[in-house]
Amino acid sequence: MKINDVLKVFGFVAVLLLIVWGSRSFWEVRPSDIRDLVISFGWWAPVVFIALLTFRPLVLFPTSIFSIAAGLAFGPYNGFIYIFIGAIGGASLAYVISSFLGMKFWRKPSPKMNSVREKMAENSFFYILILRLLPFLNFDLVSYLAGAGKVRYLPYIAATAVGIIPGTIGFVFFGSGLSGEDRVHLYVAVAMFILFSLLLFITRKKLKSWFGDSKDEK
Image 1: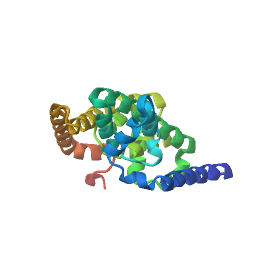
Image 2: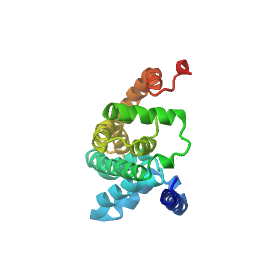
Image 3: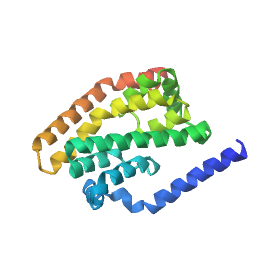
Image 4: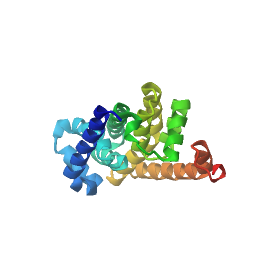
């Protein structure tokens, strides 16, 4: 590894550690806390919310918490729009950072990571879409692997945009339902979570086979 690459990696790690250290108290934040924070900005609330969500991958804070907070703060429809924009921004940021560092950042990737990266390179849109629809892997891990594996941006972001729609609707409706304004939203969210849990359970063996993680291949 060249000295410039070493400096890039150490610089990125240093910034990441600084952000994590400065936001330790943020890890215990509840959706209602995020709602109260962004609403306090008045007309700027949507902009602040989208900005926070865009930079969220840097501290690996769960997207689901933001999605629920969006439902609480903005309702199901505006909340969905803001989450969608912020999630696309965050996925793009993670992709760019990892693409900038390349695979040099992943010094000893696991066989599973290598398998996922190779599959992404073979059929970017299809595999990333599957990984976005069914949370077989962490959302941010998929973004970083796609960038590091030099997956083309357009199919990556297109698959991400389509794949996050169902889950985003579920979490935003769940948050809106918790506010008590319309319990139907809560029922819709619970039904979607049950449906996706069943779908993930039914397809788990096929997913493992696709991504080289089945016992039969050992």
